[in-house]
Length: 181
Image (cartoon, rainbow, N blue to C red; front, side, top):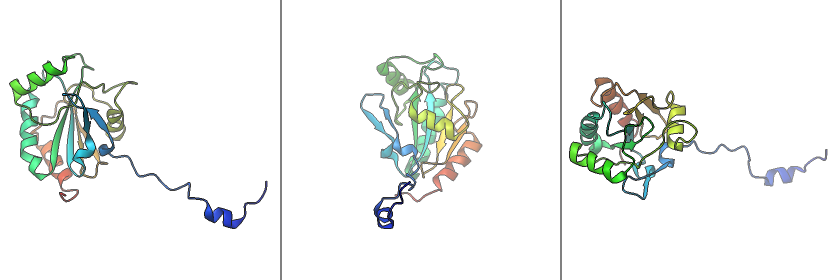
């Protein structure tokens, strides 16, 4: 094998340089109304990404999610609702989902379009969240709390209501991770 001249090595770019870690802000969903829902728009905020469904026994959690969003939004927090029919409890029509969320629960937080959460067809965001926080959602209203850095993720099962003290403390901790900017 021929020896590579030293000056050639010095002129070669560093191939070993680490790529920046992927964050939640690198993902994009489809908005419920159509068009992009780029999570980069929330850079620097703590996010609670929740898979939702209109016809589930846990659907009343929408009320608590809206209150949580309203309470912490001024501090740099957003709930992102992600309707899914993975558990066969959601409408397949975006207009019906939006109408239900607005008329029954007064939802104003951002909502994604119908999204696959589990298995080989899972949206890349949910594959990333599952890899970082203990697996895919096991049921509707599973919650992923992402800190302001976009890297730290904590998972909360369906049974943890939006205003559960443990979740509230975790939201406050996630908000403390970086100054609002």
